[in-house]
Length: 290
Ligand SMILES: NC(=O)c1ccc[n+]([C@@H]2O[C@H](COP(=O)([O-])OP(=O)(O)OC[C@H]3O[C@@H](n4cnc5c(N)ncnc54)[C@H](OP(=O)(O)O)[C@@H]3O)[C@@H](O)[C@H]2O)c1
Image (tube, rainbow, N blue to C red; front, top):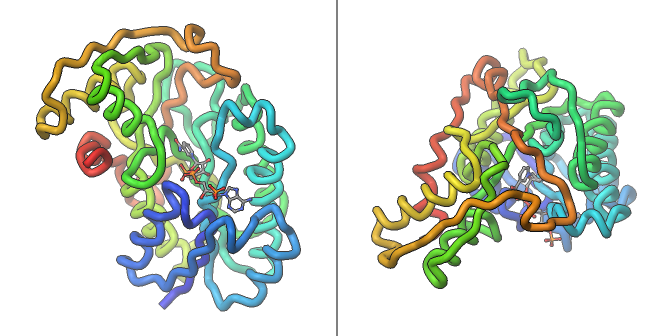
């Protein structure tokens, strides 16, 4: 049975990973932030050196997009230096690193979903530090999969789906941005996909290391996404009152960090190499808000 270390194990994705990997027969060593700080190079190298493991999945990150603008040093340490520390330790042991990255590396609007080979363009500290993390991993020349995903939601932690549901249920009046297009991704499905990718990557003949995209389908803007969240919640009898959703522009929110207008991800390579389809995110809304 293969053994895998999951960092950031208490996060939204980390918790789902713990479950998905166990279900797929992996032995899982869960390291939450308090047990393993990925910014601590010595700790990372000692822990990975000592553990009898076949791979590391990094689900840890500094994900506070706006707060990153004021906390550049911390964001860089967690999103760039931390992944580099993990990659160096994995290289030393010759084991695989699976690292999760973001659609925010695509800040330029091209009018179509972004492919893995496409040029990146970062606006904002979070996006830039996540891209720096990718580059630092690549530079170590360890065996890696970098899996970019987008608009992650699930039963654990805070996310857009829960925020819309709670506001719709308690208030009934929402303002949601229209000019942000992307792919909602269920954390549950993402964890299952990462587990399948890990399994295949550990097979003797695998050598397709590199960058992949995994995200849910269909893509839509945040306003339409919020409308669907409310519709589905009504179908499931989780909301019974009237809800009014008003479309607004990103600029109206005066957020510190810029978000891409269109960060849709082209997931074709993941289909080709791993035979993994984009999940229908609408099937996961109920499990997220119940
Ligand atoms: N959420 C999204 O919409 C989204 C979209 C695209 C990509 N992603 C990527 O998906 C991955 C998982 O995101 P998520 O939504 O699961 O994020 P999350 O819920 O914020 O979880 C991140 C985890 O990382 C931990 N962490 C922070 N600093 C750490 C450190 N120095 N050492 C070890 N652990 C540390 C956090 O622990 P504490 O809370 O205790 O600090 C938390 O448990 C990240 O790489 C993120 O960039 C997320």
